[in-house]
Length: 338
Image 1 (cartoon, rainbow, N blue to C red):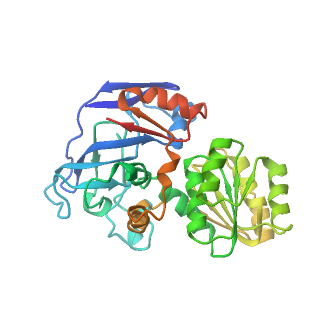
Image 2 (cartoon, one colour):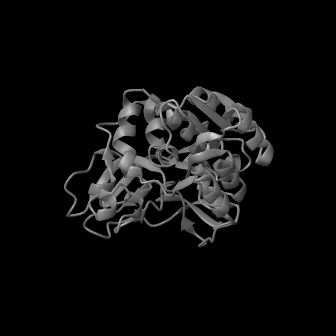
Image 3 (cartoon, helix red, strand yellow):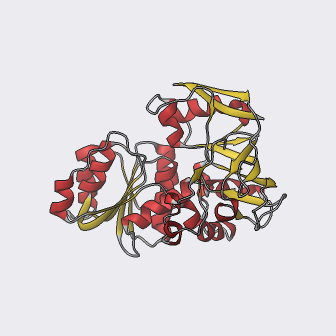
């Protein structure tokens, strides 16, 4: 099959690689109809994460079931499905507690930017869409594989509530989906921290009431001014850097909460500040399967349109250009079609 591979920092190629095969009786093979590039894919692209030269890359995809293992009961060839980036059995003790991203049988999509992908624990992981999504919903359905549930997880972890105040640190696709999540959950004041006008426009369309362009201490000062010197009830950290975490914590009122979903790189927690302010910190890798049914229903009845974060669509063969576009912030998020 044709698949996106990574060989070194900024060395992305589209090559022929072996088709994925069933390895366990609980597996399924998916023919990918749409995949995408994630902000977290930029960490290895920029050389910030270890790279295994020639490995496939991409963990977000939707498509049609091609083949299932002998123990798969709930899906069959021809079913159109959403593939959570983290696979789970959805039955273990951790899954039952809502922590599907810590499943005892955890797996990950390894070739979402390709023609085919293998899914472990198919019965627990996959969610059927009830047919091929209409063209105008395709992007939003694709967002459910990672960025929308991750933004939602940030809002849940931060304790966003109806009538409350929230700040979203990060204006990538996850941060923008965090704005949308906070809006759906009823936050009255939603502050998006963004310096980029196209992203600000999406944030406002998703429900942001204020936009703060400043970063660091200056950005925190603006958030405090907006909230009458109090700070926000909930902060969504959607970047993964030390500055983003510090900003989120400093902008949160005493007794508030920070939900973090940015993959941490060089973060040192200010435990003394958390202690002094009684600020709660929760989050981590999103348990996508936990949120999928609710979010799919919201997309299908057109209550939300998270697909707006996709502002560039390319054929699979042009995925290297997609990486360049996101790295250079010429695109928020890139969809790839085989």
